[in-house]
Length: 427
Ligand SMILES: *Cc1c(COP(=O)(O)O)cnc(C)c1O
Image (cartoon, rainbow, N blue to C red; front, top):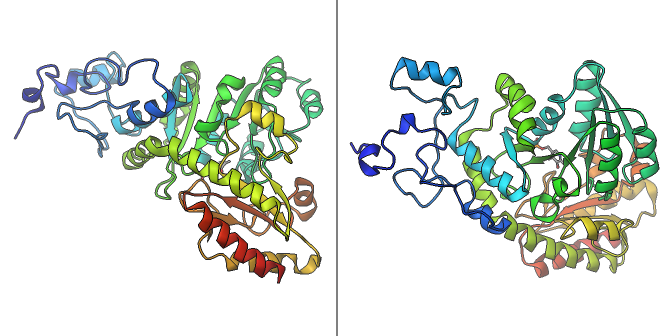
């Protein structure tokens, strides 16, 4: 059997090498590279075998040459891998790559996006803490704030995200965390990140942005004043419908301090195999997101002109209420188009919208987004069904509202599919 040490004299003893284990000398990629290059090369630490692709370390744990080495590792006198609930080299590759793309000091990957949302906040609060959040949030995030953290004595006050006066009023009182999504799901409200961050910091709060809709490609919340960014890697980062994952990005002090302490003890660890899939997903994420965004802009503009379509919400359309803000904060409008079909006979609106969804031949009905496959969701009966109808209407979610996650198919096939289904809707 080949001994790794024989292969590469620069790597004489794998076990004694601090992480990244047996990397080639120097940083993983030269400094000053751009995001698309870092997506392919960031975080790559080749082993002595000089493999092309990222190695997959499918292992729970690691071994020690001597008992004293284990002692030194547990005393944190040496920096090395000990157990995959703590760290794993493949997970490190994913974390480093995403941190480089985002421009964040550090990143902690987790099993799902909801783990990232929950732990990003839980690491900062204790009984008596106060969160101020935009009302327009992912459903499970609302459950975390209203059901879980509320039971633990953490209070959340909600504001309408696009209303800066409401933010100013809420943040006239000290707060510990400000949490928001921009653009929001599904109505694509665009929130003024620099203005909200200024108000939040004056109130002593840490600003956390769920950046799933914008993706790391189209918006950099840390540059706009946020302190922490969270992702569901299940969405565009995988982008091909395979694995779940999540990530929290921010300062080294926060990520390797209170966040790491919470995660190591509670264990919502990202599996090495999933980390490997996600690291490979990052390689193609910039081109996938840009291609889907171009198709989304094209179809959003086209949909506005179609009979049967009442309104279209897309951040880079002139008709969007925060169009200028979106152009200032984002480099593209994103991969999701939300539109509301003409509602006439109120009682039959859901039925007629279902007929539109059922008539699609290429685009799938699904609750996911950010996938290579285009998907439509009916928020009122699925993702947002738990919200009462009056609040739903206030948020702009009607029985005829459709969330369209644009994928990588030929734009003309998608247009023809939508056109045929609109004909069915119009009857
Ligand atoms: C999907 C999603 C989440 C949760 O991510 P999971 O990976 O499903 O746990 C959180 N926030 C937003 C905006 C999402 O779209």
